[in-house]
Image (cartoon, rainbow, N blue to C red; front, side):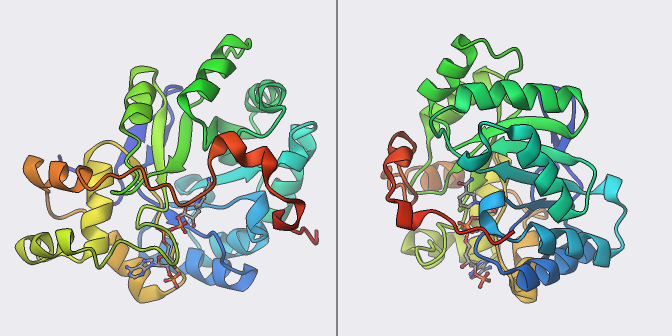
Length: 286
Ligand SMILES: NC(=O)c1ccc[n+]([C@@H]2O[C@H](COP(=O)([O-])OP(=O)(O)OC[C@H]3O[C@@H](n4cnc5c(N)ncnc54)[C@H](OP(=O)(O)O)[C@@H]3O)[C@@H](O)[C@H]2O)c1
């Protein structure tokens, strides 16, 4: 498959979304600004933030510092549950923090209680042009079905969810493909503290392809039509992770990586997200 850093996948509304971008979960404002600026200067064209990351201002700053024109950058943010009753205010506050007048993609961060009503508001915000595309995150098949049966008139353009070799979500990916929903993999390297980079099953491939484990893992995503957003705040890793466009994994090796699956989800079970204790909630200062 011919792919390069400017490659995009076409969403169900015709919008082109880069196949690869930078995540900034757990980055401070300063780290996010520096990482986004560095990545954009290197050739990345997509950044993924969220209300809950408390670094939207940093992301906006990084965009401006990079000098890359706004219309060449794809910016995603996500609404937290505190915004589900008034998504318009939630988005406007995110835009203010980002210093932007639209985002390319607005996601409902989790299937929190009230996500159906929140979705209807996203449809309206999209009509107003404040977000070019709308989608969901951490939605299982039954959440997607409930959305469709609950009167949604727009099929989510994207479902961003936890995907890496030990949590491949094949069934969900197939459902999304069949229903025109682009899948985007978060924690594509396994997530902080649980990285899969030293897995012995990747060692042989590392030597064969002369690529690093992170490049192999990210290639496994995009070669299967899945968007990947690895996070790093280190320049050398941001550069390394971008090096996934000049080799092809064989069908056999794609399958070997997929066979590592053990349904080992590292993040919360979306069905239990409303049960999280309140002390785990993000604290917002702005
Ligand atoms: N929608 C959701 O609920 C949700 C949940 C989680 C994440 N996300 C999004 O997805 C993005 C990526 O997921 P993630 O941050 O959980 O996990 P990840 O990208 O799989 O892993 C990030 C970790 O890997 C390290 N790293 C990155 N590149 C590396 C390399 N080449 N070699 C060695 N270590 C490397 C990073 O450290 P350094 O930064 O120190 O380099 C960081 O600790 C997030 O940043 C966020 O934007 C969304």
